[in-house]
Image: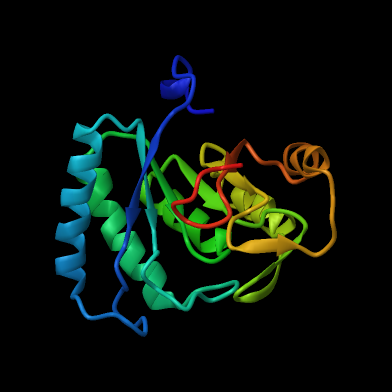
Length: 197
């Protein structure tokens, strides 16, 4: 895990849920308006005591199941730069629904510390269809970008999804760490805002 979190038993990561970005179906705000709102949110979260921040394109529904459009990557990069320049807290990137390659590219470009990947290994049935793990591409891309410092946080039994086949959670955890190369794991409830079971 990040060295700044070594003495923290359970680091709290504050989510910077972006409203719909320009080009998204519900996008109504300009990039400048979004940037200012995100900077205010980050300031509030850090004042409240979170140990890090994660930028996520939460408002871009319906999500692409895999790769997002180039304009999404550009917008998230611009906003990420603004967050990184203003705050020194650890910063992560999550590109929904499962675009870990774009998240990694953004993180490497702006000096972010980690990314989140909803489906790093295996396959899940989601409202975007069947999403397959991307560890095979992501770890090779991380090496190619010389971005080993960008940690991969992987979801276990990711929310808003179901497994293709029943499997013990211990096996999923083992595969995520041992075979898919996750640096840390994320546990959530069945949906955004629900407690983990």
